[in-house]
Image (cartoon, rainbow, N blue to C red; front, side, top):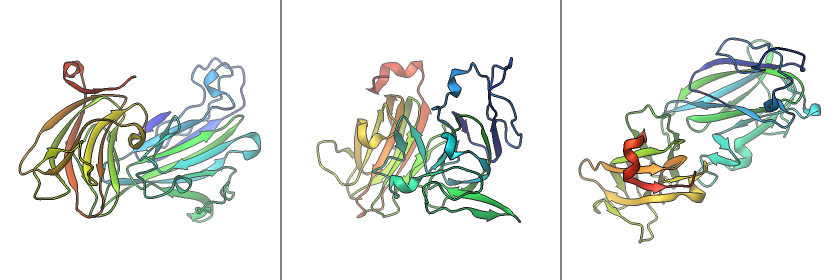
Length: 302
């Protein structure tokens, strides 16, 4: 598992095991540097069923374009690659299956074999890049994307990543560096989620959700089609197992600064919208530390 927020070119090479004193095995190199190191035969993490991945995260208002070149991953030996529009961990996806505009079968595209057609015959056939080279080109819907690969015996690939401006970001993977995050539905019937893969202190700074003549209030006990949920979960998809710290609706007429400490593996702020209102919320999110433990709003089993 390799996580990066950098654009550039990445390469991977796995050669058949040989006797070697190397303890590192095949690995990802820094952008623009090729890897040609033989795998350590004693490394248990490089078994035939091992699935690895490079996880991209960009700025909140960006999408990610991944171009796969020189893919030499043989389907006949069990090799496989996949592009995921979002992130996947332990069978769960971000954005959640209920919250993404595309069905899961269009978000996960599998392929293998150099310069061949998509293994599943999907909607992205090879495209010409440059003068005479074929490549797969994929683009995410949000600031998170994943390239997974399984290479049991030998294989290699080269990929390049570019970030593009997203004029209407909805789902956001928090990298923990932004001063604040904006969630908006742009008047559409859609759910937008801000997710961080760490325990966090969430502060709702300003909110406008639902009826604009309603002051900010907690609305857990009332069935509201438009609401802002703050909470945490063990897995990556909060739409299935979010432990809610609060459910907020209404309109703030000034700075709110509603702080909530979420001690879970995943922290999420989820804006649920019916499409009848232009909903938006400004929140801040920072990693929780020891001083926040006594003020925990939600604690999940780790």
